[in-house]
Length: 106
View 1 (cartoon, rainbow, N blue to C red):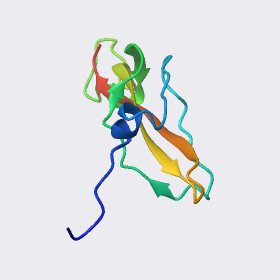
View 2: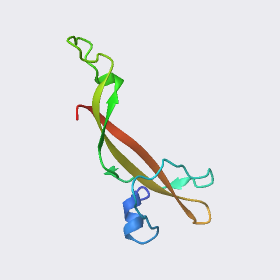
View 3: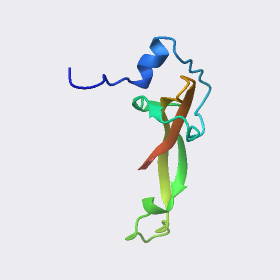
């Protein structure tokens, strides 16, 4: 064997090393600088309901007849992923990355 095994954050939850409770999307957060040994990021997961909101990049620049060239409806789907990091004493901290996937049209 030529290196360390890759540990995924989902494995740490499954093994009971850390616990993740869920209620909507977590805000994006980073661990303090001392937590420098991190497992791999989890896969992206939908964490809340999709919603429709106008976005400027969804407008039709060629429109006429009363449509809005400066914006249009866009579907927002909230996602998040996490990873578990450890300090030199074995204490754990969970980092979260939350974002919306946005596509024109609702």
